[in-house]
Every structure is written in structure tokens, then in C-alpha cells.
Image 1 (cartoon, rainbow, N blue to C red):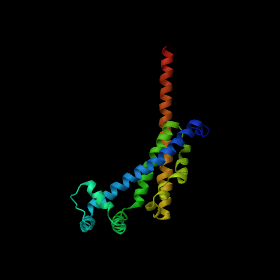
Image 2: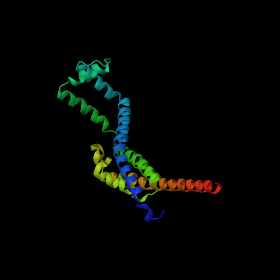
Image 3: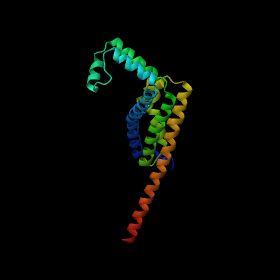
Image 4: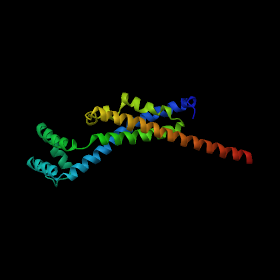
Length: 196
């Protein structure tokens, strides 16, 4: 893997597509991870459940009503009531360790796009451009308010370790695997030509 072969048109195109994929994956993985953790936090917190049930009952919303009825009842709440309900939910969500979520999301997203970018382009040096350019588009530490609130040191750990290091490392392994597959294919093709 010479440095000169790292900057080809194929590599540039692949890593631009990988950047677009990272943009989409950040939203999906962050939403899924945050949703699962928030759901688990709510499911484990009986005090919160009782508060919400009591609040809804006070507002005339039956906990056994259908989803459509509950949605209509929620929409009919005053702005002040909606704000109170939102504040209750924010409190439970604020107890989640968002530093860990940021590391996990960054490692998964930048690992996937780094590996696939390396595998398809058979290069790895451009892998670092993905986290760098994501700051201009959609990086978790600048995109999501909860991630913005983590400390500067934690942001550095997320960016340097979970984004750049994971992206480069998996891009390197992806490129090595891509080159092996290419070499194996060329060897098989040469063997077939030799027998013909």
C-alpha cells in the first residue's frame, strides 16, 4: 500500500460516498441508541412512570385508551402542560451517560464507514477525512445538544479515539482485505487464462 496509490479517483469517490453514509448513519445510530437507552431508563424507573400516569390521569387521559385517543388527548393539552410533561421526560433522559453514547455511536458509525471505505477503495489514508469533514456536516459532538454538553476532554476522547482512530484503523483493515481479495481474484483469473 504505497502512499501514491492512496489518492486515486476511485478512493475519492468512495470516501465522498462514505461521508454521505456517515451523515445518515449518525442520525440512525444516535436515534436508535438514545431511544433504547431512554426506553430502558423509563422502564426501570417506576417513580417516573407513576408521575406520568398520575399527570395524565389528572388531565383526563386514560392509561388504557388507544394510541389514537392518547395522541388526541396529548394534542389537546395546553402548552404549559406539554412543557411540564417534557420537563419530566428531560430529567430522566439527562441521567443517561451521554459520553458513553457518543463514544459508542462514533465508534459504530465511523468504524462502519471506515471499513467499507477501505474495503471498496482499497486505500486507507483518506479515512481520516470522514470524521474531519463530518464537522462541517453532521458530527455527533456538534449535532446533538446532549453531546454538546459533555466536557471538552470527553469531546476530544470521542473525536480522537472513537472517530479518527477507529475510522483509520478499520479503513486500514478494510483496505488490506480489499487488496487481498483483488490479488486473489487476479491470481484466479491468471490461472484460468493459463489453462485456456
